[in-house]
Amino acid sequence: MKIKFTQSYQVKAVDGAFYAEGSVHDFRDDAARHYLVRGVAVAVAVAEKPKAPSAAPVPVVETTSEPEPEEVRPRRGRPRKPTWLTDERDVD
View 1: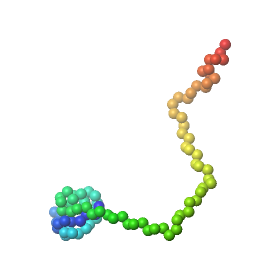
View 2: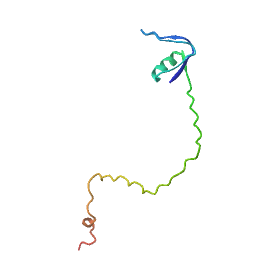
View 3: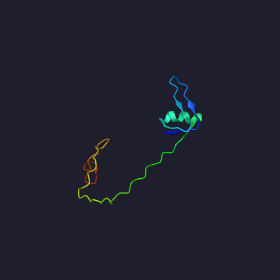
View 4: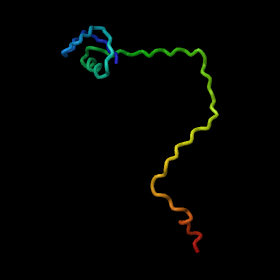
């Protein structure tokens, strides 16, 4: 995340990095949040690069291949009884 320091800031660690007022730096989100919460920096909006216009339209190619078959999953649970065993109409 890019942040801009609104005031000069000296890190209180052994290394003690110094950030000047108005300088813009790119930090990990958790490190940037540290400076934002302390009120010594503000988030910088990242502008998206405009897409370059394409020179020619991309032609649409129709495919003649068949669609891929759906995945066949095994049935779950108990197998069903055959219908000829459960039909009592034919019993005399």
